[in-house]
Image (tube, rainbow, N blue to C red):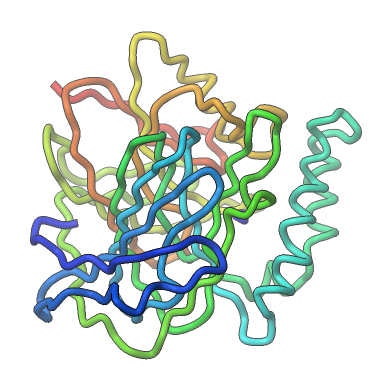
Length: 307
């Protein structure tokens, strides 16, 4: 829970969903040392089809949303002493209890206090959010490149159903092992740099029509929040940006609840300060906005147009 490339890559083929093993027959195709290492992920309602293990280093995750609901991937690195089963037992339920504010049983502020009290201390001090593919509407394919060190990670989506149930509670969470073997893939080259600060996106470069790679560098995280992230939303004539901002608050009654108030096209989730994630965009003429899930109402929105 939360809180690219222009060279033709060789894809890591996958099969199965949570609890299923990748087929022995579906191995990565031959690749050169200079090419990206691409992992294919299919997001469905409510499962990820993905490999059980991948090499370490710069990894590009190409997520295809085959579901009717929006989905994303958040990777969290687990401490060595915490098993995936322990994480499932102790962390997602605490977020669900905090979300009891949806029933009017507790106030928003009480929900935040309860979350802090109920989450095990090791979550706050030892679990590391390591990015992931940003919000993607049904039918959208996104590409995000991250540097992942060897270790055990959770891979999850906590969008809510139209009934307010977290996708993680329905099975959209699984373990991913990153091995000591290196992918030997290069760090992407960015066309546009975006620094995530408190509470501002600082953009260096020109967003333009067509394909481009965005580097999102995490320079700050707001105190008392779960961290910054960045997602791209397409704004049409009927989009109410204020409603999109409200929807991005997961703890709100209708926050991250299906249906989404706009079409989402990818981005990346939070990472430790100093880390950079890369995501690929193909911008067509129209209106867009970069928006953060955390602290969105405090100014983490950047609207722009492509002529």
